[in-house]
Amino acid sequence: MTVEIIKENSIPLRGEFTPPGDKSISHRAVILGSLIEGVTTVRGFLSCDDTLSSAKAMMMLGVPIEIEGDRVRIKGKGLFGLSEPEDTIDAGNSGTTARLVSGLLSAQNFFSSITGDKYLRARPMERIVKPLTLMGARIWGRDGGKRLPLAIQGNKLSAIQYRLPVASAQVKSALLLAGLYADGETEIIEPTPTRDHTERMLSYFGADFEKNGTSVKIKSQKLFKGGEIQVPADISSAAFFIVAALINPNSEVLIKNVGLNPHRTGILEILKQMGGNIEILNERELNGEPVGDILARSSTLNSAEIKGDIIPRAIDELPVIAAAGCFAEGETVIKDAKELRVKETDRIKAMTTELRKLGAEIEELDDGMIIKGKEVLKGAKCSSWGDHRIAMALAVAGTRAQGITEIEDAECVSVSFPGFFDVMKRLRGR
Ligand code: S3P
Image 1 (cartoon, protein in one colour):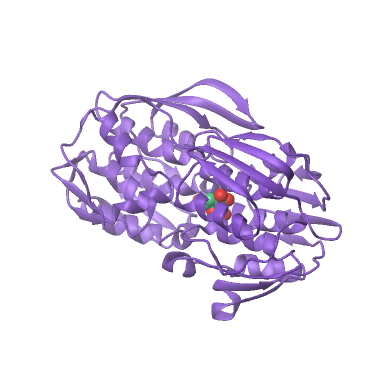
Image 2 (tube, protein in one colour):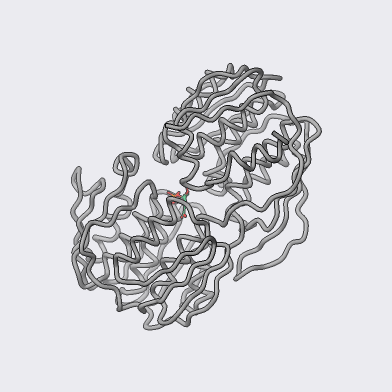
């Protein structure tokens, strides 16, 4: 177990950096790249525990994938070239791997099984098992098909029209992948729009689908043309340093080449609404994804009420927004975020428990939190709950906590941001 220590509070963060590649896009690059005939090269790939789980899954399905730093070369097998894995696929901690790959496996003409670590085995899988079964997949799982491990006997799938009960890009993407193989046109209707990286990448590779408001329709495909994918930096990783720059005095951090997909930029809107001094520079496009540089400076933050449609657009950033709320004037309310309870850990419980250890006044709601802003917190021993984003959000809060903040089980940052603590030290000049 690694314990990370954040010492000396209120040190300015200064400088620039490029966060590692976008996790959601990196997953999709290795999964979709495997379904293309011929070679696809990926640059800016995020090489972290989660995306390596997706790459290993595709390798177990017979796809040659070479990874060298942030460069990946995939010798795609085409839609119908995957082969039966010899062993159970291990998705590790990655919900994206488990759900997207299960969608794909449902349509193959072979048997497979998929599992994950203790955190992922506790997360809900019924949300994919139910619609995939409606399409004709045969899936068995623990707890009546609700949890990993899943055993999947691939089958010929039929197109369905499916209204997602929860806003989830992972479920949408699992069904889009299955829909690539189904007879006819599969339509997925979302309660609120979620990240659309799968749609953008499918479209970049020439798939035939229609998007209309909250509805996405996909037709079955025979072939995609290969290409090169450039992955922008991850706004979810940038978020920790945006908040750290806003809450610490005399800070100015330039975060470069960040993906600005409108379904992911809720964090910027929320922080700006809270008074955050944030500028977007150098906006451009990379493989159909908007990209830019983010300049964040020390700010005096106000509280905000965060609820409704913006929640799915900031879902992974809510832990660090809760940390920001600790230093904002007034009461910050986060609502409509029950999904936080089924992430890598129960992030509502984890953040309320751990921020309280640092002296924060925070109330747990069934679907969110109420955070009373304070000037300073007090350093304490906290736990990451084995969740990368909890570890990083607590580290950010620790930069403004008096005394020493220790984060136990901090090695889990490697799930999405392996060099997180080095960047933190560098920007703080320590
Ligand atoms: C992701 C979708 C979101 C997000 C997760 C990554 C994706 O999960 O929280 O970190 O890559 O599609 P849900 O689809 O469960 O909301």
